[in-house]
Length: 102
Length: 224
Image 1 (cartoon, rainbow over the protein chains, first blue to last red):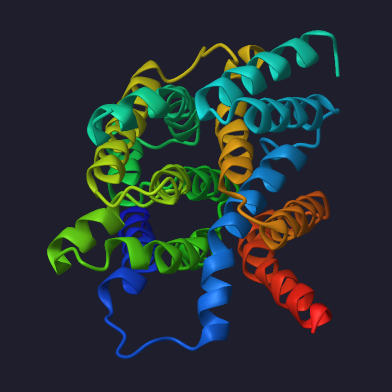
Image 2: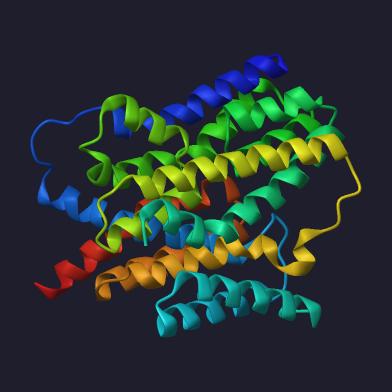
């Protein structure tokens, strides 16, 4: 496959993963079990993204800086209920922890 | 605060991150021999950071296009879950609008959008503005990186790369409404982290995200 064909097919496939559930209209009400599953899905996916980012932030295992900073972000989020404070605290914490060699 | 403004105010750390991650993407794309138009085209057409970095790495190792496409699909399969979860909030929008919203659906836009909807808002402006600005930042970063080509200082030293993960952590904390949510979140974090540490990076988020809600069922069944 040429580069351009690869990019176009990758792009189309990616767009399908994004658009299919939004484009296709389902009829009727989904069963209770499915609704509960879908209800829990956002928290699960975002938590999975967080877990993956904490464990291997850029593809190479690192020290405990990310784990420590994630706990700081968690604490600040729970205490302040403010997204921005938590992000700033997490970024500051990870920079500080990396600086001391964690 | 009006939704569009809120999207900018709350989203700027992620916009900055997108810009700053777009730059190294542009740089590594050039380093494996892609031209500026080729590097930029991938950001315009595919618009998925993790998949683009994976593509560049596979191009470097001389992988077949088919392998690249399969990897991209695997990495991006999580969008199916995200779009499904987003569906109830955008159900009243027209089809063209939904197709537009789908194009800017990223981990970040999903997380921020869900965070907004969960705070009781019903407008699509917040998600739209956030998604559009993030798209601009990613493509601007790509162009800058591809133009510079090399010699970019490591953004890791300033912890900027951690902004995405910190946002995910905060969104989960703010989004947990009851004990089942908390258990689902903990299971998802542990499964995703374990899979990535085990080397299954491409499928870690998809598998953990799809399996963790089962923990909520298990919990409810136990109570009966």
